Image 1 (cartoon, rainbow, N blue to C red):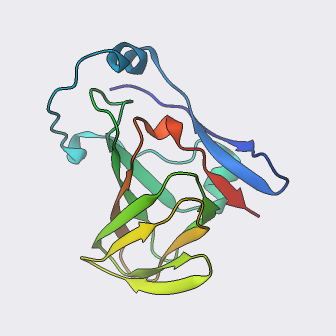
Image 2: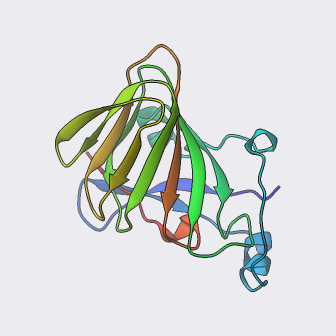
Length: 163
């Protein structure tokens, strides 16, 4: 399994931070391979989380990257599963590409550009480009959701967190 580096860096404006993902030799090798069908069993993957203390202190979120150029071979789509712990939050942030969430289990709410909406199993959410958004788990069990980006790799998505 390939290893990915996650850190928090200052963004382009004061008060913003972004998550930056490193690449490894395996991902670089796979970038030039022909696209083929991929089947990923998320049970076989380890959870990833914020490696930098600043990120771990601010968020009770973890994720598994399922389909992405980092996992190869794929292009044009990033898919993963995320989990927000009970009482936890994926803090308000934004990024250039649009994103979708599909809630698999748990209860909570999503806030997009100041509008809060309840979410639960079976809820699909579209987040427009550069929309400020956050995801909260309000239930007694983790909120599990599938996320997607129309990008080749998750490393192509710069996250900016508002203070």
